[in-house]
Length: 179
Image (tube, one colour):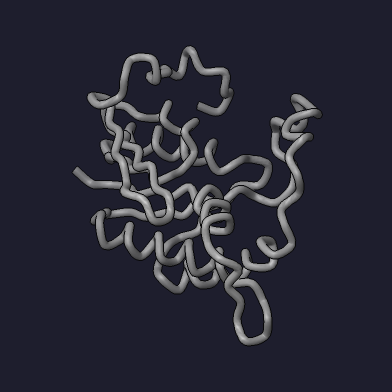
């Protein structure tokens, strides 16, 4: 069966930024998140053979949830400047490694991943989702496997058979409108 490997790159980005030391290049520019994400992607690609790949990032700006609920993530601090300045270089490096980038204006990465896994399943394609976001565990099903990854730690794999019933959320019971 063909396999789609999706990476929640926004999750990887924040994890790498907070896990890595304050690495900088000779010009003094921060590079820790770039280094961390690229290492995670290299290892993931070595560990999992897939027919299709995608790195999914949150798009800049507000999402449809902000329109529905103006206080959505209002308490969340803005992205640190030392992280924001690494994104453009990281995108170029990910493309150079052969990973397609996916980002949809007005939609968060987890919603895009949910949509892609559903479309893949309808076409008979198995999906493997690599993320640190526990909310994406609700995608686990007959054709969707989730990998929880974090820098320096072992990967754990969840499939429908290995997930406790309490973590199984069907699309009809989900409050997320795009699933």
